[in-house]
Image (cartoon, rainbow, N blue to C red; front, side, top):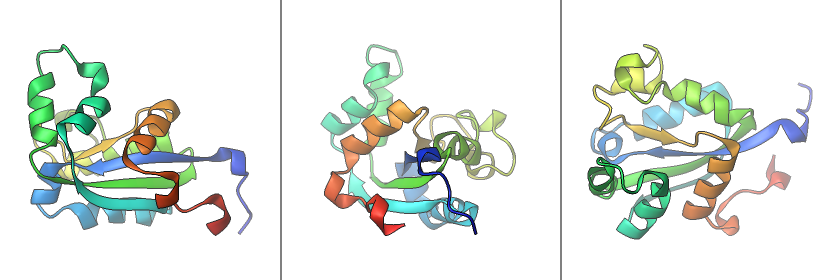
Length: 150
């Protein structure tokens, strides 16, 4: 197999939200990314504090749904992951499906496992810039496998 151009390789942040963890969907979500051929470079299960949640959802501060969003995301453990692969930010968004499960493709994670927008099982970075910010919020450099481990 030919080596990929290293400049085409990206990293993205993916989180199984509390509803997905409660429903036992962590392995299924993990498996979707693994089957696609993406490389896992960081993973941990954690309980989000309100401080981390507020930083994660900072762009929504002041919106009517913001308090409920913080309440939900801190209501139970989450599975935080960093995946790596070619154009993975866009690819991961396709695997997850539209934010609103009613608009998500039937084979996507949200299309298969989510019934409503408030409990849509998974979060993923929406841009390479968001991915960088979110990865740094949840992981230190020491917690991630380096480029040399490919």
